[in-house]
Image (cartoon, rainbow, N blue to C red):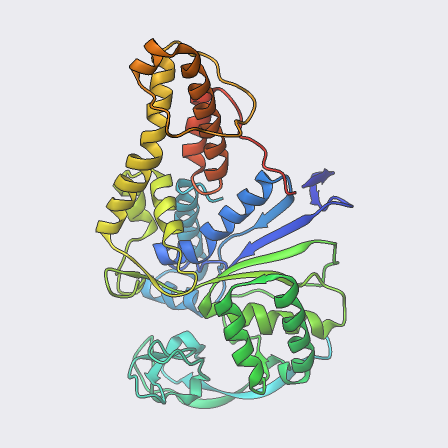
Length: 432
């Protein structure tokens, strides 16, 4: 992006892309499903855009506010701020390891919410558990893990306070609601135009379309909490393309609720253009679970000593784009041995080892158009056909240079290691 007084700005007359992802909650250690569902996908796309010479800004971070933070802080017997400070460092370390880098449509309403008489506090959704109307006994106050339905907390049968297991009562409280029902036609128009002109994943389109077939209900955007943030003030629009990477459980927030907030202001905000959603990454036949400690978590990734690019390669090759995919240790090992070592690594190693042994100490600086894979590269070629040897080696090295540049968004450390051996920078791949 262009620089002006330290601020990152769009370049007039050029293509400008803003990339964002779902902000992972900072109340626990992220697992592999969290990482591929948002952060890693967004990182690869931003690297890809920059490699094509597009002015690209990506913004990420951790979500420190929400009922999950308060709930975890109570469990760990610390303040929400202490919890956030602790896990923010953990998240930052993991992302470094993986090379990741109000108006008329807002209205105050009286709403009914569970209240705990034991500790004299309203209970936000994550502080309540109970029976979902579908019959699942351990549903959370915001969503049922079994049927997937978004819940109004008071829909739960036999509710219980997650903090002290007591039975809460209901009381009235005042919240701010976004009146999505009054914005439905405009949101539908936005959806039709954005999904046609931009690039939306099929499941993102399906989930949003299903929501818009029903009558949208006003959505609360405030909660009774001790920690949180105020609604941010409006900022101004620039000619920037907005791209988002999120899991399927967050689609409606980015395809219905947030666009509704923008449309409701009546101002010309930059709206969603590209929506890339993922299904779930499962673990050895079951679900990843932070609360139950099931799966591979970021701190475990560090302890394995396995290079970051091996994790990146596996997660990206198993990205759950149209259906759930599964992490198994056997498939992870196979990815490393078969894809990275046997195929990609063997090709690069064979060519560079031969080049060094034949005293090719420099490489060509132009991209080769063709590589004749049928030409056998060995000592007999060097001895019997020296002129042909030079052609084959030159084309092979240029192909390696191209491959390093192509895989750089996916495996940046691998690409850098190859280029250090070639003594050359990544190839620019222009956005033609």
